[in-house]
Length: 251
Ligand SMILES: O=C(CO)COP(=O)(O)O
Image (cartoon, rainbow, N blue to C red; front, top):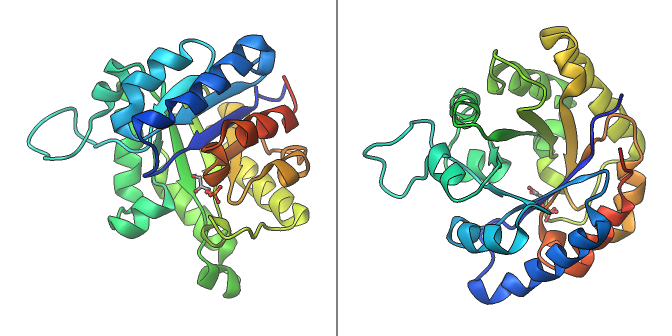
């Protein structure tokens, strides 16, 4: 049985408290049935997590955009998985390409963060994806194989880990891979997960991310082994994000 689709919004470094109205609109849509047969997640900036949880309640999950690999300690400016859990988060994104690029995060660090997230009782959304240069060098599959091998914890529970395939060149650019490329790559990710984790690998949701919009969501979300989307820019506006949720199949 295919896993329940997950439509996730990553607000990145966007959002002030005055934007909470967008979440109010989303909460109302979810309360009216948008969340039937699909899971919906918003990852706002950490400053908005607590208020977002208050608004979204049980209809829409909230998540962090990153966590530290340690439980607590002298790490100024960082946030632990337990702190995210404490304010109502159920998920946390780890290894987003922007953190890999801006903060030099390695596969090994991403894996440690995913382990910390799971230990705190959060679902880890582990991001992988090739850069444009890697794609041009025909290295996409090699890069993804390395990231999967090194960024994923060994202790796998299909319900506690989500993999998000986000080609770096598609993020914020309006460009997307062809449907055939997405099918081929998600199929590769699925086979890799099953080879390593057995049947648990079939339960892991594999999201596509990178320039998902209301206009292309239905086509992308209908592809085999695309179990949802990780949406950046289009998640900031409730009407666009709701339209993307509506485009997703239901379990
Ligand atoms: O990075 C992304 C989500 O994590 C995708 O961002 P965009 O949807 O803005 O391309």
